Length: 235
Picture 1 (cartoon, helix red, strand yellow):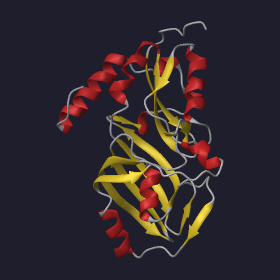
Picture 2: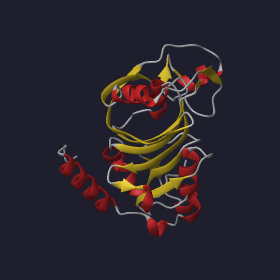
Picture 3: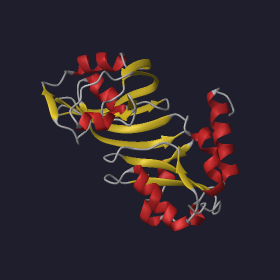
């Protein structure tokens, strides 16, 4: 295999649309740059929002970016659970939605440090095989629990059994797991921030061009400043 080029180098802020996988978006950027290309955290196909796509020499700074906190907007349908925790799965349970007081009680239990099962429709390996592949085969497995930190979990609106939430969480948090814990499933999911980077500064894949890459040094400086402001380690 011919080694991928190290230039152009930098980080692209890409606004992923619903439908394609994150890997398809990364491949689209790679075709334009013809450079080594990676990412700093994927989104499910149904989800939209901010992807950090690393190009060329900047791929080596991925470890500095994957651990950043993330912010999301999601609409959670509290009238049913699905097999995947999102609209792509089969409905496995239907029920009446909670009233506002019960909803707030459930939300309160999900703020701060939480431990939740990883969704069955995830890429985590169970016995050497991806969990989502086992789920597709109908194989029931006990999913491992992951510890996460929910820094903020705020209600934007609650109507018709659907609650719109704005949340900021530690890296590795499954929003679908939070929706499941609330008694529902994610109807929509949009990542709005990754550390100091915002989807407001991103472009859709079709509008990307190499000149939009943020230099590696600028990216690292923003990360260091953000972590310093949050009182965390600089790197």
